Length: 620
Image 1: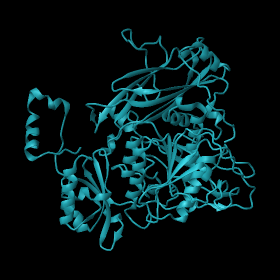
Image 2: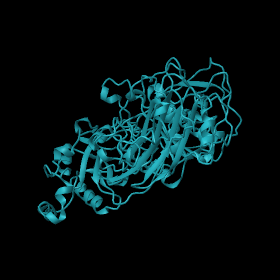
Image 3: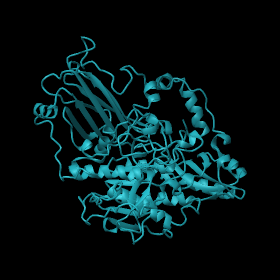
Image 4: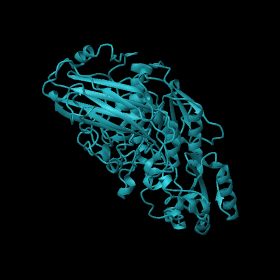
């Protein structure tokens, strides 16, 4: 815990512990030590920092919010006296942190570490280049995949792609609004190729040679945020993020895709500015952003195989790559692994087909409009997954929120027994029908809304009036969006859900009990301690997903009791805003073929069938 104050304040604080009326000793059981961070603690992994002659390229983190101008001004003055080249004009704020790129020698950094509000100085990360696996190759020997007519399914859906741009000659121009941001440098051919391929994945998914490409679900705004300085200027990482930040601050999008980011694996001790800034924008739950997990899954060092920033965003959808669209899929070898930081432990959130050497991801050939080009990478898995979310919005309309779509994608994903670290919650179904419809003996319910602090929500799991026979499978997925505290990585999310499963409304733990007896669902037991909850990262996770099989006789008016807990910097929040949430519950009973109809009859007037607004083709 970081505490700021003058010497007299710390002296009074120590004296207050022995003052009974304040009862501070009850709130704080023990303070083991109080000390100022040493210079060595503030200088992190500088031996790995990139060098420019004698200077190191570093990233400075200050304990300063956007309103704390005096801290930034004081830092600037002190850095100047030391002769440090601090790029203060490129600074970024997120929560209570200020991120500043800089260039300094080791000796200068040791003196800079004496600045009171300096949290850490660490190596500056670079933008990822276009990975070798992601370079598309034209396939003239394969049958053509002609592009469709220019019409889209729903022109009201707003989608943004942040990437390398695409040339005016791109055959995708009928469906792409090509946006050049002000004060950006020249375009780079290789980066435009990447932007074109990513846009093709958003519009069409992986093409099938010999078939006409499906009609796009909507048009996209493609922002070129990468220029000729992307891999030349070591500080351009900040300029790129500022471009994305400015767009998200000014415009509202339903969906967005990021297949770019820093070449940096997620770390547990401190949050990266890309993650912090993006999570701030996504905390309203009004935008679903798919983020490529990274193509570093085959790195020699196991620690370098972990997901890359900013796919550790707790409010985003981190997407890894599956090696096949068939049933016998597995994680693509190049796809980055989890876990993420806690909270945000289960990462990537899901996999989507991203291609492999034996089954490439097919995009539109930039040079031959009806031709196909082969590629692979999480850069294409992420926009392809986003395309499925866009399809759900086009099909069901605005009644299905971005959080509801995220919950549906995760809820219907299957892991085939693979580990969480490899596949997250599993691969998103390649057939949209598996997401949009219920099979025989199955019913799926979606709850959407907002929760206020300390509020209790009782979400009923709808069952028919008659008792179900045999085994019944119940699966539930909670997702919510939250504000974050980037200055406190261990307590990063400000909102948490304490969820209690009550399977039978006539079974009570004691005669005096008011509520029915609880059963385990997301917890290991009903008696997990706060410490256990924190270690499992469950209480403060923004996505919870699990299933249970039980006898039909053990279920009678089952419910989830949901309690929203709010915190700030790990402590009780004095004020907190409502958080948007989505809950998807599926009930499956193989003996009850007409389960869907029976539930609708039993809950007539309370449940509304989600009717399609626009019919979509089954082929995706």
